[in-house]
Amino acid sequence: MTAEGPAAGLHHEWVYQTSDGGAHWKEMPSPSQDGTSYYTNGIVFRTPLEGWITASYHGAPDAPLLHTMDGAKTWTLQAFPIPADYRGGYANTSPPTFYGADKKRGILPVELVRSKPAPDHRATVNYETDDGGATWHLPKSGVHSTNFN
Image (tube, rainbow, N blue to C red; front, side, top):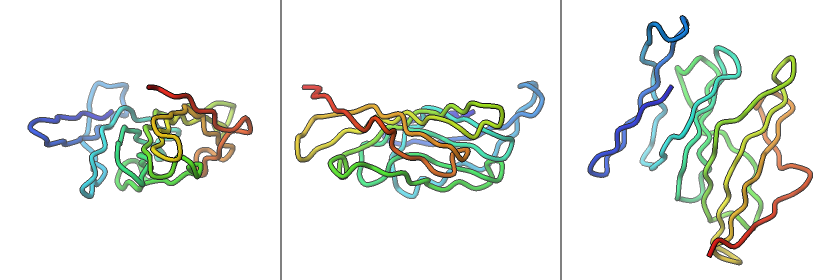
């Protein structure tokens, strides 16, 4: 669970953990912002130790996908391939969904918005994983953009 409180340009996040179905909550370390302006929109854990925080971020070059492998004690920015014509634009990530008996397969919805060569184009891409989110790759169907102006 994440909570956020933007006010007067300030943005703070907290991460809480429960192991009893929500009867009790424990505050966990929050991801370091390092001067960025991520606005979280979700959190998901594939296992008790491995999880992701997703967010909106309108600044290049990062795509906001924060990953923990130690139960939210530490977080790192997880990279995934951005198509060349979307680099320099921005990305918004949404929580991944995992499926299958071992929950190794999954999709990561990402909205890509580009500024060059054709500005104001966006694409919603369902990145795929076969290794439980250790790596994410573009779908075989490719990336198809639409003009939103």
